[in-house]
Amino acid sequence: MIIGRGLIANIFKDINKEDIIFFASGVSNSLETDANQFRRERDLIEKTIEENPTKKFVYFSTCSIYDSSKYASAYVLHKLDMENLIEKIAQNFLICRVSNAVGNGGNSNLLINYLVNNIKENNPILVHQKATRNLIDVEDVGNITLRLLDEKINTIQNIAYIDNFSVLEIVFALEKYLSKSAIIKLLNKGESYTIDTSYIVDYFKKNNKMIKMEYLNTLLKRYYKI
Image (cartoon, rainbow, N blue to C red; front, side, top):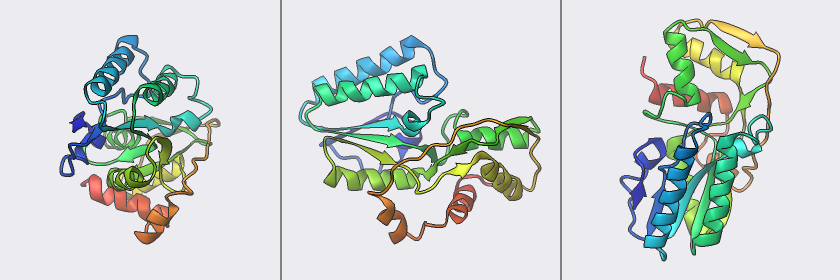
């Protein structure tokens, strides 16, 4: 069973399993502050688990929990609250903390979508020089989730790439790929944080995805047609 219609939900549409609930219908905008949106997600989680008590419940949380510039935000506090709720009421669960997923579609608030749109439209981009972000192919999110389902039930696991990218690295790669200069305003600020990916690093080794700039360029070619 798949709940949701967004970027992550779509990767499971061809591997729908009746004994598993992929819950990907939560709040996705990290800038969200509307209490009604948070309540809607909570109510739907409670209802879904109550109606399907024996099914494995897979919830997609966020790696922003590790970002010191965001961990006090309404969005992150909500995600932590939902993790705690699921741990309390679900018999079988897997909570996946996902970094910045990249794929076809998704909302305009997603990092790469935001940068691509603003570069194409000649809009200025504020870049925090010290900031890093972790980008991961949404297909890798799907593959790793299925692997974790076989090995890590009733746990919280990170799903992220093995290394972070500075925001400037991402912007420069986009400029080269789009053959278009970005209008950048640099700010001497930003946060960098690490994500433990030790358990899944062998996945990236096995699939020859260890060189981070090659990984980034492959994402751009795959999902952003010129």
